[in-house]
Length: 280
Ligand code: ATP
Ligand code: ATP
Ligand code: MG
Ligand code: MG
Ligand code: MG
Ligand code: MG
Image (cartoon, rainbow, N blue to C red):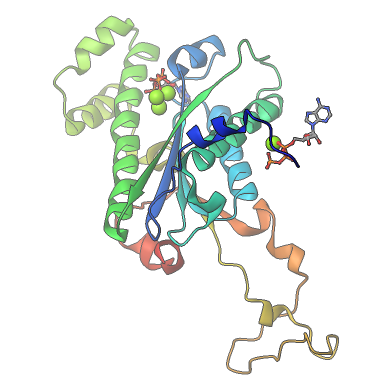
């Protein structure tokens, strides 16, 4: 196609390629969700419907962008880890960032009625997004530990805060004041002695957040059905591999078949040692 004389303005779009061979974290966070959660009568301290909707929207991102290997969500935020060898959008930062925020936000709105059938949207929810690079597995481990520690700190505070209001009859100002200067031991004690709540018995989705993990796709060799495939493109069956029952490729794709939804500790080694492909 012939170029117009205006085409030169395109050259002002500068490259924003992310450093190759580095881990990419993209995080989205709800804008003004303190207000948004009030306007839509979220249950306090934790609205399960809202968390499920966040998890679903994150699943939509992972369904669309296969290089997102795992994700962690709490409250109104979600972090996505993109494989360090990823070539997604030629690693263009703004393209990756904007696409993730857009898929997430659109999915959140699209699926809202499924999770809040009796609560019409009062205003269009929006999310901000950022992309950060990390040089090694150490920082990725610490990044997720940071977010999960944050989940714990916030949830313990919010659980105590709302117990004082909902069961203790305090005003928000009074509850705030009652918790001033308390450490986590004090908050556990308030919950247990005054409200008979054992913090450790609360649902793990509230205490640990949600981790979405992509399981490795079965290698194609194992999907080859012997005798059925022939000709030059047929792949030999490797006898040294564990032979799995042949399944159709499609069964290995799609959110439900591929993603594990977990609410467990990701600060200690166990989670990561069991899934070496996440940091490969
Ligand atoms: P900003 O635009 O700066 O992010 P914000 O109001 O969204 O401001 P955050 O620090 O992101 O502030 O906190 C999100 C707030 O949204 C929480 O403090 C809580 O009040 C509310 N919220 C989010 N998810 C839930 C949920 N599942 N249940 C109850 N409240 C929630
Ligand atoms: P990419 O994801 O790379 O942007 P794309 O399919 O969105 O791919 P674009 O170059 O952005 O490609 O072009 C958008 C296309 O969407 C148009 O070529 C046209 O086919 C279609 N389209 C957009 N708006 C309209 C419209 N108002 N009426 C009819 N077709 C439209
Ligand atoms: Mg924010
Ligand atoms: Mg927010
Ligand atoms: Mg937040
Ligand atoms: Mg387009």
